[in-house]
Image (cartoon, rainbow, N blue to C red; front, side, top):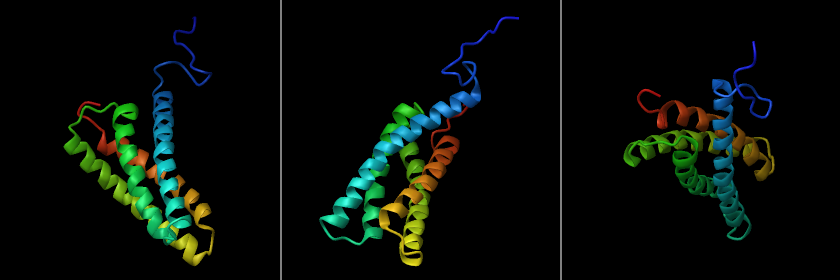
Length: 146
C-alpha cells in the first residue's frame, strides 16, 4: 500500500495534528521572539540608560512586548476572526498571569538567588512562553467549532 500523505521536512504526514500543533507553536514562538526582543530592549534601555530598577523595567518591557505579541498572534499564529474586544480582553488576562509568573521569577531569581537579571529573565521567558501558548490556544483564540 503506497504512502498516501506528504512528508513535511521528515516530521510526519501532512494533516498530522501533532505536526500542526508543533508548527503553530513554532509560529507562536517566532511571534513571541519579536515581542520578547521588544521586552528585552525596553528592559536593557531602562536599566542601563535610565538606571531603573530591573524588576520594574522588566514589568514595563513585558507590557510593551505583550502588545506586539497580541497583534502577531491574532493575525499570524491563530488567524482569529474573533472581535478585538473579546480577543484582546482574554489575551491580556493570559498575559497578566504570565506577567505575574515573570515578575515572581525575576524577583526570586534576583533577590533570593542573587542571579544576574538577564539570566533570570531568560529563565522567566521560557516559563511564560509555555503558559502563554497554552492559555491563548485553549482560551483566547479558541473559536466555536475549532
